[in-house]
Amino acid sequence: MKKFYIVLFCIAFILVGIFSVKITDFNFGGNTRYTDEEMKEMLFPNELSKITLYNFIRSKLKKDYNIPFIQGVDIYVTGMNSADIIVYEKSVVGCVKYMSSYMYFDKDGIVVESSNNLLDGIPIIDGLDFGRVVLYEKLPISNEKVFEEMLNITQVLVGYGITVDKITISSDNNITLYIGKIEVYLGDSSELNGKIGELRDIWEKIKDLSGILYLDNYNPIKENTTYTFKKR
Image (cartoon, rainbow, N blue to C red; front, top):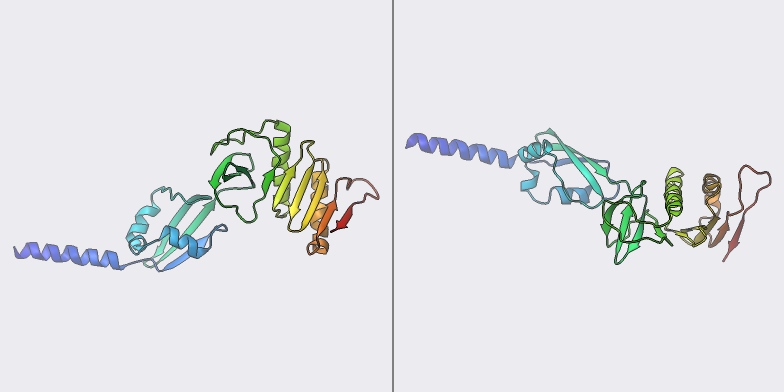
């Protein structure tokens, strides 16, 4: 009987030791959609989830954390009380309004997330004609050419580091960007890189104004090409 109590004591001692060693130093990387504190609250919501041994075990497992806009998370236990957490975010370049939700899509036009909230820095695309939107499938836009132009616009904007609030594509395929109090009328998608490049170059001069920038006739390969800005 004495040996039995000794074994129980040893087990209890080990368990106390295991449960008392917890992660207190969290080092996050890769997260831009959520702050470090928000990621910490979602991944480590209680004291049990901070136990070092538990995190060592789940670092070896491919766990799906079901966090909106997060593709995956890697946890690396770097010490008795420390861990590095690498966050892999879903690639999102735009969204469309569908029923009561915003459907977010990646650079290939695949719908990767659905949310009731409109994210900062992600443009909403207006003027597209599409059918039933299904998560993890390609946006069902009826006009393939318009679909390709829409993806091209979002890619060019990302490439130039320009964040817009909304992009509209009219029935005759003319494009308008909305950035704060400024509308940027691009016309059709011809010379799109040159138009967006010019927008980037002059943005500091006009960003605090209100009005419409007409870049529809701008062509960087032509001499004396012009554009106008009409203040409101």
